[in-house]
Length: 425
Image (cartoon, one colour):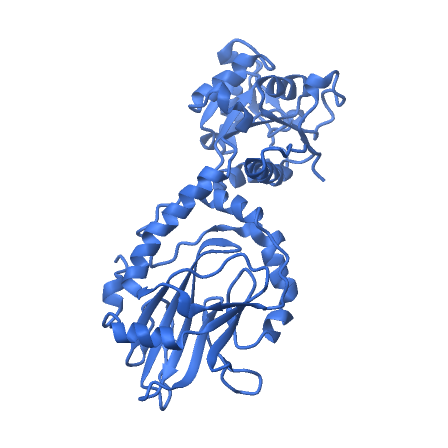
């Protein structure tokens, strides 16, 4: 059953509720270089124990608690995903005096108490500390500093885990494709930062836009697609990955041929199938561009269960020419609904400098040479055979594609920057 935000709340907050929530609103301390600050806040007033309307958490009423103000705090971003919702629950007695504070951290609810057991009050205001990039709440900075290594990794190397967050409240609202997750991932990788852990940036939540939870839910339903659309407009992505077959996916040394010289079976290069599956999961469009006979590729790639992953198969027997002829690459673009103008955002991966690399370079595509097999020449005969990138194993390809897209994003933001080519480590 679709989530209904209005059914989740017993009553909408009154203006008096909003005014009280604003008067008691917490101050949040962020690292000085925290790039993401809160936006809107959804207010709910709970008058009895029960499940939070905005988080799958039981809100308890200890003795002396008469009602609870729930703050559902919205960010467009945390450092690993688009969409961030954290929570603070202020527990009040019958005179609306503060008697307790709970807050969220990594999907769980925790009482906010300092090491000495006191409530986190500074200058008369509830004051919480937010983890850099991740925004989980703490009553004091020490627990955050104890997690410095993990949090620094989240804000730097682990931004590659980025995605669009879709939880149960929005799974029937958002329509997210694998490519969308990849665009968000690249956007966040370009915003990696090393946190300062000084917590000198004080954010007064009282200055935020306070709305009811149903109104915030409606806002999020519109806001996430808006932010995603802007990310996709700003972050260029690879339009397609063209793959050779022999000694790129298939180990030519293991080929078995019939009397008509069709390849009837062959082993895949170690890691090739996993590489294909990773590209599909990441939302890359892939096409086969290979020299050989149509039946051979049907036998081998079909036999290994990977033919279905290719949106197009451009094979020399059917085209009447072999690589590096432009016709092979033009046919791939056409089959994918792309044009020559899109070639700069297309990648060709192959084992042959004189065919795969030379042909891709002539088209203005990004060329990636897989230097895996002992066959074929290893030294470019002239500049037209110099690859943009070199890898030695199929497993390295997704990493290089990520590098390329990150570089495309940097160039998009700073057009004077040139994309550097390098061999994979």
